[in-house]
Length: 429
Image (cartoon, rainbow, N blue to C red):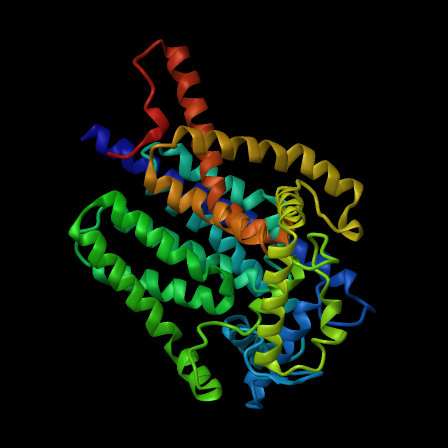
C-alpha cells in the first residue's frame, strides 16, 4: 500500500515536471520565432529558405480554391509538392491571413508537443522512470530542433506526426495483443500517412519499421498489426493517389520531384549542398513536369554509373554534412552556432552512440529511436545533405541519449549504495 502511494506520488511529480518541460520547450521555440521574425523584417519573402515560397503559394491555392499547381518554365507542375504542409498553411492563412508570427507560434506549440511525445515514446522502451524525463529535457532544450520547428518548412508539421506514429508502434511492439490494439494500429497508419504527405522521403521508413517489428516479434498479432497500419496509411493517402491517377493516368504515390532531388545530389557540379540552378538551364528548363523528372532521373543515374568514385566521394561529403555539429551554410555559421555545436551537439552525438550500443540487441529501441536518424542519413547520402535533414531523426534519437544517461546514473547509484547489479539499459520486461 505504501509502495503504491509512493509510486503514485512519483508519477504525479513526473507529470508536473513533464508539463514544466513542455512549457520550457514552448518558451524556447517562441523565442526562436520572435528572433527569426525580427530577422525577416525588411527582407523579401516569407522566410529564410526558398522552399517556403512554394509551400506558401500552394497553401494560398488551397485556401482560395485555385488550381494546386506551381508555374515553371516548362509549364505547370501539379505534383511538385505533396499537400500535407500546404494544407496546414492554408488553414493558418484562413485564420491569420498573411501574418507570419502567429503561424510560427502555432508551430512552436507543435514543436513543444514533441517534448511530451519523446517522453511517451521512451517510456515504451525503458523501465527506468528517469529516462523519459531525460529524453524530454533533451528535446525541450536541443537548439536546432527548437529553431527548425518555427521555420515555415515541412519539418515543423512532419516531426510531431512522425513521433506520434513511432509512439504508437512502440506501444504495439511492447504489447501487440492488448485491447484496442487495432485502433492504435490505425492511428499509427493515419499519422504516418499524413507524415508522408508532409515529407515524401518518409515513405520507405514505415515498411522497413513494420518489417522489423514482424520479424522481431514473430507473432501473428505483429503481422496483422502491420497490415492494419498499412491500411491506415493507404486510407489517408488515397485521395492524393486518386487525384494524381486522374491527372497523369498512372500511379503517382507522392510528388513528381524525385528526379530533381536526385540530380541535385548526383551531377557533375554537385557539392553535397543543394543548388537547383540547373532547372533554369537547358536541357531541363523547358521540359514538362513528367518529362523533366524522367530526364533528371536518367541523368543522375548515368552520372553515378559513369563516375562511381565521384559518387562515392559525394556520399562521404554528404555524410559529413549530415553529422555536422554546426550549420553547413556560412551565412548561418556564427560564433554562437560553433559554440553550441561543440558544447551541445557533440556531447549529444556521443550519448546517442552510447545509447545505441547499450541497446544494440534491442530491435524495438533500435527501430523506433535509432531508425529514423539512420534512415534519413542513408537517404541524404544519395540526395543532398545538411543539418536540416538530420533534425527530424534527432528527436527520437535523443531517447538513446536519455537511455545512456539513465544507465550512467543507475551505475553510479549502485556503486554509491553498493547494492546489486544495475538494470541493463532499463529494458522493460
